[in-house]
Image (cartoon, rainbow, N blue to C red):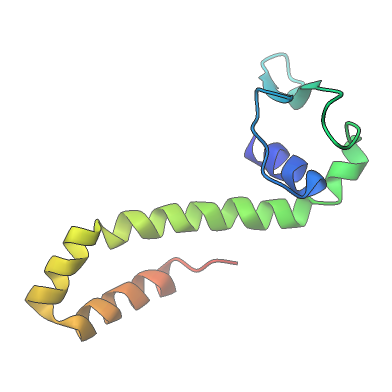
Length: 108
């Protein structure tokens, strides 16, 4: 579903509050993820699958990078953990640790 919602946001060139004017659903009947409702108040008409597929590469990059960002945040720890690391090991050690996390979890 993340890919479809991301493609819709790229198509509209803005963040979307889903389940309001636009509803996206996963169908258990094999249809996959689809647009269940597109309100007339949305500034552009409901896109075709071909119009959304134009954004496939960019949507994939965004979804993958968001996963990497979440993983990095998990590995960084809380700000309190980071401050404790700086106090215990020094700023250089913390910088090295953060850079290693970034290196091990690169964005595309």
